Length: 124
Image 1 (tube, rainbow, N blue to C red):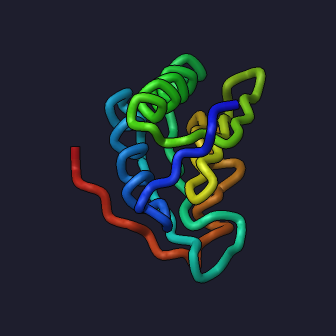
Image 2 (image 1 turned 60 degrees about the horizontal axis):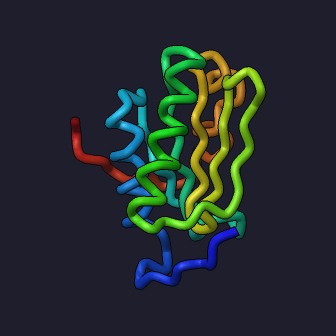
């Protein structure tokens, strides 16, 4: 495992926004950042997005991993569903969930974390 890289970004918001951009570059749909700082100790932000197919979900994942390494944003852990319906990437302060649309609707994380503030993202 690579050494952890310390940055001035202690909350992870700028990393979350960069990662959102990486996902959008692969046409991720409905990209949302939820601010969990005041309501959870899991992480500071959830980034949730979806793809039209399992192939696109994997492409979004690959893009995020590749670009994050380039930007020196340290991946702590990732979990890939063998069917590519849901992928989780843990960046410590930011946890990314990439879903197929059906899986996103089924798990409905936005509803489970509905008390979290949504962070605005620039329109693409």
